[in-house]
Image 1 (cartoon, rainbow, N blue to C red):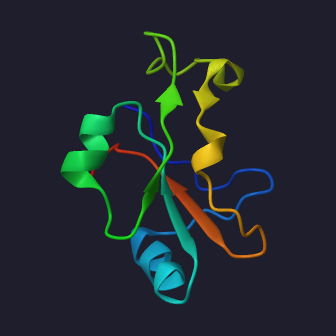
Image 2 (spheres, rainbow, N blue to C red):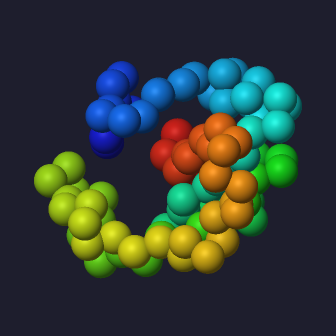
Length: 91
């Protein structure tokens, strides 16, 4: 199982509690799940779903993320508002 990184270049990693606080202050919450079923069953209230189209071996630790494709048209249009991305792992 992969572990959420504590640091990531050009990104601020936040806790789930911080994510919901940011959302309550007007931020966007975006789910990047590989399966729509995960989003339907376990989405955070008010989140937007962007489908992640990935090859079958995407759960390997050495998976090349440049091979993943997202439905970027589903992203919020306002770019000046904090945006939190999360996935289905450990929900």
